[in-house]
Image 1 (cartoon, rainbow, N blue to C red):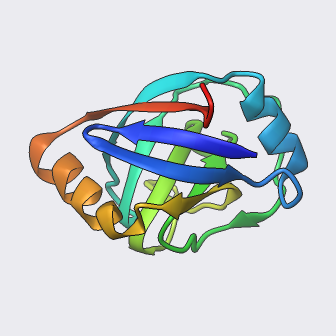
Image 2: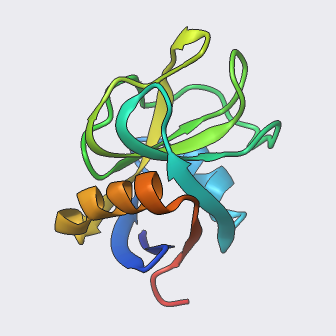
Length: 138
């Protein structure tokens, strides 16, 4: 399933990973369009994240990783740390103040990969950026 993701001034096409993470994809799909904001990560390396507090997607671990590749979104369903969505734009080892975590890889960016590093720098130097996930035709 194709998504359109707008992060600050950047627009990305993406694929919802319905086969690799079916429960996470289904839970996220029910919430589209989903709006929040990105800030630069604190412990994980070259990534941006959307802290979501105690937001409950009602999912557990599936297709989870601590090392998302550039262009991969992961959803941390909460537990040791708060619920969050993270996008890697470079090298990431997903972690929080309690240590290494793993999140569900559920979205993959399919266009605009060359803009990911600029998104990261924008969040780092200019602060929080609005973030919107929607179906590609919405």
